[in-house]
Length: 309
Ligand code: B12
Ligand code: SF4
Ligand code: SF4
Image (cartoon, rainbow, N blue to C red; front, top):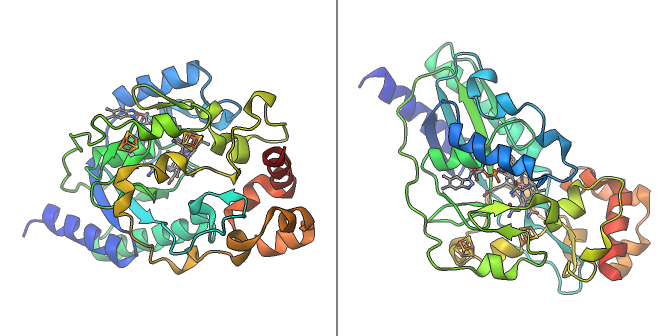
């Protein structure tokens, strides 16, 4: 067996050993087509107040600027579909936020993964990324053959749907590359477009981030949610899953195997009254490891007040 095949087999085996559900590999290259889409999106102000999306444009479209001599972009998916549901009276929280913060869970997996690649292959330079870095993660996942970008903007895997986090490992190691995912299985379906509560899903797989409930409830900092959104949130207090819940491909979702994603009981059971009675001290204690920390206590209270009106 030649080294290329051997190294690729090692990478794929280690991805599974570290608990990732899917692994795809793409050649590291400049993302010219995606750069155009990103530029248009930014020029139209679809990032709202997420100023970090304006930063590091050149890094975001070129993996060699993140890892000198980059040869391969390894995309890894981690399932977060939960085995429990929120009670009907609970203010809605996106499924990705039921358990511990995925950034920390995945960062630690990526670190181990890279160390093991180095142990088994030899000198390899690389960096692992999840969410917060200037990496177009969905675009890389599609290029690595893992799935297609749905009309709802999400990366959808034909076998298991879209309730997955995406992580990326950029390395200066040559590997065997997967073919990009060429098909699009949305067909004539328009469920996500029809059901999005704030009409944030535009034609051609473009999502107006500045109109998405996830943006208002998580990313919008120290500001009030605009009046024209009143009555549209359908009880979503943190994030929104509507465009994924209605997607027929998510009927194939299976329950995640990550112990760290076990749901915080309060997320499942707290009623509006319980949330209202919650003190900052208890918030910090209960949600110490949770993605809910991102909005801070004040953000949760703002969102709660907004959905109650
Ligand atoms: C900013 C951001 C947001 C913003 C803006 C959303 C958006 N659509 O851009 C807000 C806060 C609204 C948001 C919401 C959500 N997000 Co978000 N978000 C991001 C972040 C940090 C950057 C995304 C970005 O670059 N946007 C700019 C636009 C232009 O890029 P894009 O949407 O990725 O689209 C690219 C490709 O899809 C491609 N593309 C688009 N059309 C086409 C067409 C063809 C033919 C092809 C080939 C490619 C293609 O081109 C674009 C440019 O490369 C990524 C993490 C990351 N670093 O990538 C997570 C990320 C995209 N988010 C994620 C998640 C889970 C969500 C939510 C589901 C959370 C929730 N439940 O509330 C929602 C879903 C909303 C939606 N329908 O998109 C996951 C997506 C997982 C998946 N299976 O796709 C990511 C990857 C985080 C992660 N590491 O897991 N998010
Ligand atoms: S997450 Fe909710 S608000 Fe955002 S695009 Fe999807 S359905 Fe619309
Ligand atoms: S709901 Fe339908 S149109 Fe939307 S992403 Fe899923 S399959 Fe595609």
